[in-house]
Amino acid sequence: MLSLGPLNKLRNTFALNPTNEYSGHQSKILTLGWSSDGTKLASGSADKTSRVWKDIHRLGSNGVTSVELKGHTGDVDQLCWDPIHPEALVTASTDKSIRIWDLREAPYKSRQIVTSGENINVCWSPDGKTIAVGNKEDRISFIDPRGGSDGKNKYIWHDLHYDGVEINEISWNWAGDLFFMTTGKGRVKIVGFPSFELVHEIAAHTANCFCIEFDPKGRYFATGGADCIASIWDLQEFACMRSFTRLDWPVRAIGFSHDGELIATGSEDNMIDISSVESGELVHTLPCDAAVNSVAWHPSKHILAYAGDDQGPSNFKGNLRVFGALEAS
Image (cartoon, rainbow, N blue to C red):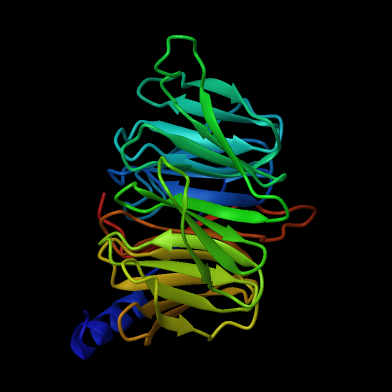
């Protein structure tokens, strides 16, 4: 836990930290994610493309390069890196497919897997052996990215669907033995994996529960909802440890820092709240030009990437911003 001294030091550091802005997409960015080694940041956009940015954690924009990943014919609503191999990325699109990208050598190639509906969320199991993708019909498909063990190239090995239950964001815990789903009724459904038997259900919010994120230290998970509240939950007891109520609009994005000490919440308030996980104290308020769609902390540094609904002269700007004390090149 950060005491008052380190918290004040962080406040002073963040007050001096720059925000760098990068352009590349033709429409708004919907999703962001860092590779496990922190050398690459991926973005997915409503312009139907993804981008991989290299050296973006280094000081200034000089030397930062990005590569466009084309192939989807619909919005790229969410993406996720392979937790084991930092050169593999999965993107989920409303074109009823996911693509698994191999980024080891250019030109980068992808493997398309067709799914049953328009995809809006995706996550990768901690052991790298399963990808879960959810669609607008609230159906979750579990995919073996290796092509199945039966030799028949069968990628989708299980579907999960609950009648009348809106499923928003999905994720495994770090142990990989529990699978979490946030729902339209403000609840979090938790099932065992791979049994899919219901383990617990939490009444987390009084309105739609939009997002979920896990503390890298394996102690907590956090949720954000339409009730404008972000909450931190104990992963063992499923008990609420703390709630953050400084936002006035629905919480759309949430993320823990690499050390598990800070939590960033983004909403339609045109700002990002960065607070202490343990004390709940405000550490920094990061002003934004528009509603926030995604936040992503660097896996080993206090560097935060974020993007939202920034407007240009005739369309969404599609710009990416990175906040924090970047490394010297």
